[in-house]
Structure formats: structure tokens, C-alpha cells
Image 1 (cartoon, rainbow, N blue to C red):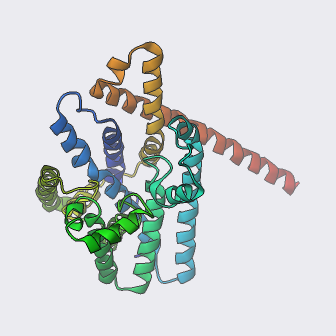
Image 2 (cartoon, rainbow, N blue to C red):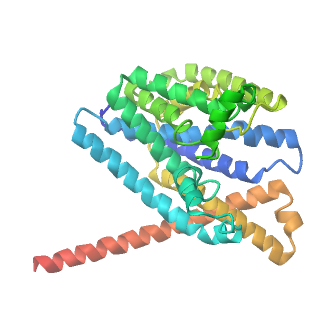
Image 3 (tube, one colour):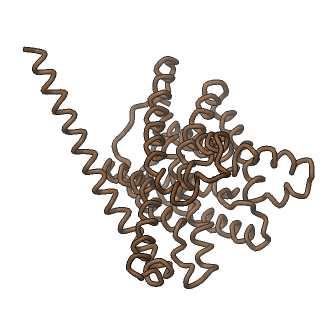
Length: 356
């Protein structure tokens, strides 16, 4: 799939902002104070496009680096894992105070539970994404280098099917005691099938397959518009039925999410605006930092007596958390940039001294 990476990915970078806001919505339930059904539709169905989108972005760009040179391929994989592992480790350390505040380190805490959280669940509710995407990429790399592209995608589909039965369609598992015992054994290893084994691979592979096909022509976006509208509507309908009949154990995975994401991703690629690295980085900062902003708003509410207004009013709470998340993220990005510039300047100075 190594073809050289173009620079016109403004559609993807722009949607990262929408995805980041939807993630915040998922964790703050903005419509809950006004309409429970509307909030459920937004946060439990519509916002489920966000994480698959991030997975697909990863697969799309990662597999463009994979070619015929095995050594370079392994090097690309290791660089990817090292970069994500550092960010994950930093995020774990960053949220230790909130873990303490939330009672994570109680009498029920154990080394095995910590290992399980680090490998699958995340030590805070949003951090599962990092082990998820790392494990998903490893699985997809293994499949892609040992099977045909279609074979690798088919296996990832089968994994997703297994995940569906542990997620939105768990009611069918409960109908069979033998099958239920298998899933109960899996749930002793991880809390959800929404993880890097069952959830991530199909979307990482889908991103890689789209990369192999190349970017769509700018004038041919209409089929993707129609396809996205059609399958998005069908996915929402599927989600409503899943909730209406109480089929779910969790509700992150839907069958029609796959074609919906395919058409959405192709549609975004058809926008030939230039890539915006700033937005790309900002989206990740918002994802990592927004739970901290949720806690800050809650603490401010308690300290000022404004909890009924800024916390219990779900829409105001969502808006405040969103604004604060973006402000804090911009400040953090600037701080990191200054640190990198100072480090680069110091290394340059040391290099000049060595030359003398």
C-alpha cells in the first residue's frame, strides 16, 4: 500500500473537530435535561461514528507506509506503537489524581485488575482507545502480512461479529448457556468486547483498504453522500431497535456502522482541501483532556454553588466542558510546542559547540 502520502486531507482533519465534540457529548449527555430519548439517540447511536472514524484514520495512514520491505514495515509498526505507548503512559499518569478522587485505588484494587485495565479497559473510561488502537493495528498488521487483503478484512469482520454478540446483540448470547459461558469467561479478561480485539481491527483494515484504492475524484462525491445518508439512517434505525428491544450489554457496536463509516470516510476524502496538522493534533488533545475538564466544571459548581446551573443543566454543562476542553487543549499545545522549540534550540547550540 506504500504509494506516498498526499497532503490534501482537510476533510478528515475537519471532521476530527466534529468527532471530538461528539465524544464530549457522549460523556456529558447534553440533551438529558430536556429529552431522554433524544439524548440516547445522540450519545448512544449517532456519536458511535467517532471512535471508528479515528480507527479508520489510523489504518488509512499506517497502511500507506506498508510495502514489500519487511524490515521497514516492522520499523513503521514499532514507531507507531512507541508513539502511542508514550501518549498512553502520559495519559495514565495525568489521570492518577482523578483515579484517586474517584476511588480507583480502593480495597478492590489489585495488580491483576490494573494489568487488565492497562491492556484493555483503560485506567479511565476514555483511555481504552489507546490499547484498543495499538492492539487493533498489531492484529491487522499480522493479518495483512499473512493473508490476502480480502482474507484479512474477512477475518476482521468475523472478529467484529463476535464483538457484536458481546455488545449490542448480547441478548442472543444469553439464549444459549454454552455461548454465554464463553462470553462470561472473556468478560473476566476485559469488561467489554468494545476493544482492540473485536472492535478496532475491522475499522483499521477498512481504512487500509480505502488507502489501497486511492482517493476518490473530487467530482464523484455524490455516490458517497447518498451512501452515507442511506446507511447512516439505517444505522440509527438499527440502534433504536437494539434499544427498544433491550438487546444490548453495551451499545458501541452496530452492524450497519461498517458501511456507514465506509461512505463517510470516502466522502471526507473527496474534499480536496489541504491538510491541517493543527486540527489533527487539537482533536487528540481534546480527546485526552476533556474528562479533566468535566471534573473541573463539577468542582467549580460545588465551590460556587452553581451546580444546578452548570452541571445539572446538561446542555450548559456540555457547552462549558466543550469550550474549556478546547481552551485547555490549545494552551497545552502551545506549551508543548515551546518545550520542543527550546529543546531543539538547546540541541542546536550543543551541536555548534561540538563543531568548534
